[in-house]
Length: 139
Image (cartoon, rainbow, N blue to C red; front, side):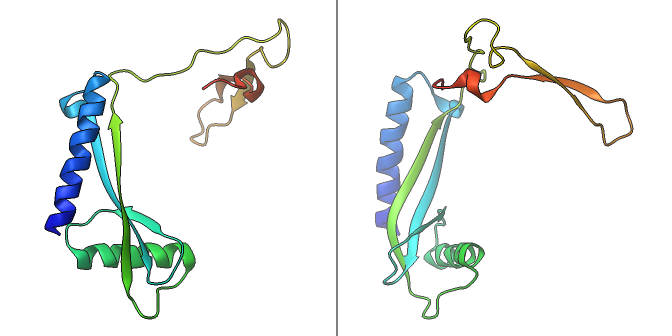
């Protein structure tokens, strides 16, 4: 496991430097370790959160395999295929796209109004939405 930890350290260092170049630092950087595992001779892997002990990692994989496929492997030989790091820069404010505009007066450009039932017995709440078509091609 020392070799894996050395790889994690290298990957995390690269990820931190990349995020720092984008303006993120300290607690604004989130790193998540995952392992991609499979039963020996299978062609598909499952990704599970990294565990420092191999026995815990294998147990986590077998739980995930049973949840996904409804059974555990018969021989129980688990193969570590890949290490996967997810690095995120956490923004101080959420990035919400502005509503797009389409042809004036089209149904896609007009917000819709809805009255949603309140399960608590309180008066119905009103909400506004915009159509999916008005966001076509925007990310």
